[in-house]
Amino acid sequence: MSPALAVLVFFLAVAGNFAGMLALTTVLGPKRRNPVKDEAFECGSLPVGPNQGRFHARFYMVAMLFLIFDIEVVFMYPWAMIYKTDLKTFGFFSMAVFLAVLVFGLIYEWRRGGMDWD
Image (cartoon, rainbow, N blue to C red; front, side, top):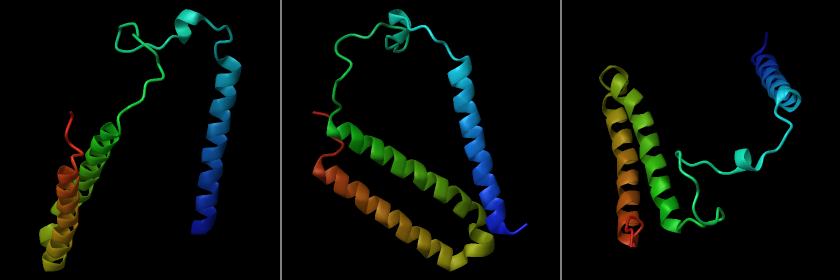
């Protein structure tokens, strides 16, 4: 089997799985609406205030920082595992450039006040 055909078969299987799950939830899912069950539920307490509140832009900045540094760890772990055997000097300097870009981004955000919760 060619690689292109294998990818096509995989995508068809995923699409079939998606369509099957959507059909099953439509057929087997609950049909009666209930105001109590449709109400938002947050950590065991009833919601207070309107549910259409807006988040401050700083929340998104901190969330993006979290994602960036999460992804950094995902890239650094495999790098650290194969550093001494395969990467050597080139691997060290490429990771140094990667970390420098992240540190400059962190300094930029810090100076712009993206981490201040006034």
